[in-house]
Length: 204
Image (cartoon, rainbow, N blue to C red; front, side, top):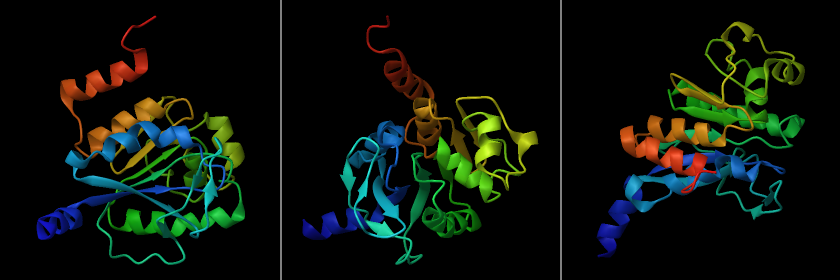
């Protein structure tokens, strides 16, 4: 029995959720709870610049599972998800570039929402992909090194190859793209999931 459980455990692919102090806890909540169901084959783990507790915008304290400082590329990472929040303009959090570079170089999907798209834009990750963010003027103001104007799309969420981006009001659309990209839900099942959370059981 224990051998079986161990074998099942090591076959799970990890989806990393990058958190900072002030991370927007709701922006990845729909998708992380869905991905973390045991039957999906994935498990959600948190990563930050260090392993000090991080406090979300909603006051939730999270102890990161991994840190950039101690990151060792031995994990089978399925995707990196980066919520927005108040910390992406801080110099210390630019260390996240280490894990983004690792994922990009190995064709591991990266999904960013809200001001995390600004972080990506400032480091050139959006320059050659269709993407969105918290409006184009907002993105350009917050990311002085951004050069991706011609690829910007006014949309709730945009999926282009291994990059998913969304604006701060697009958590559900963001989640839908992630679930589809990872093959957790698809077709009618995915559409039904989205419609329930978007409109409710009893649409007003």
